[in-house]
Amino acid sequence: MSDWLISIEGTAEGARAALFLALLAAVLHAVFGALQKGRHDPLLARGAIDASYGLMAAPFALFIVPWPEPHMWPIFAGVFVIHALYKWAVLASYRRGAFTVVYPVMRGTGPLFTVIGAWFLFGETFSGIQWLGVAVLLAGLYGLALYNMARITVARETLIPALWFAVLTGLFVALYTTFDAYGIRATADPFTFLAWFFFIDGLLYPFLAAAFYRRLEDKPTLGPLAFRGIVGGLIAFASFGSIMLATRLDQVGEAAVLRETSTVFAALIGWLFLKEQVGPVRAALMGLIAAGAVIVEVGG
Image (spheres, one colour):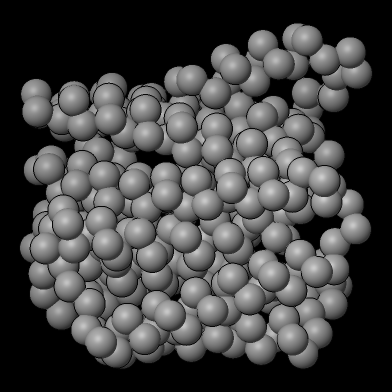
């Protein structure tokens, strides 16, 4: 598998595979978001998910994939710090604002700065048509956030701090997307990076969540939380793994933009399975998101 992936890097076949992987990541990210509709505190859910995928990745990292090259250890240290700060910003935003408002802001800020970061780090450039696609996608995402903001009735007093944390989260999304792309390109075997990424990334938040759980007076039942962690861990493997492989095979910026169609897939899941109402305005805004992604791909 590794040899085949390496052989198609920078080819037309690699570009097609990257397109499929980025869209797969978008769908799985939407499923992950749907699974987060629950009563658990975001820190508890994050700790359960990280513990699950960290334990799953450990045997692959330690015994199956090739051992990381010496120059990879500083990269893994950077990955650990960036993702820890990203999760902190996500949790801070989710605890202060409505998900339907802060999530589009996070996802809209991410690809904009990822495109800029990919230009700075990898020398990737977007054509004028692709920048138009980015603008259309951002109009859809930020329009969706504004539309939902005008209609929420809860947690309005903490909405402004939540939005600032959402913007900060988007910056961390851009940072980890470009840095992870650098990391997965820096090792000979991409699966070495993936296995060690999940193993290392699962080391911190389970302990933070456990400390938080011990301080709770009304402790939630651990069974449902553990199940949610296992399912979320498996989806995280496929979602994050897909987008990281896509960034090795093709342009980082294009993969980042395509991933943000997850907002569209999330709405479709909510409409089809959760019986949520979309409405004509939301449908039009999600159409802009999808159109922006298509323009970026066609213009490349």
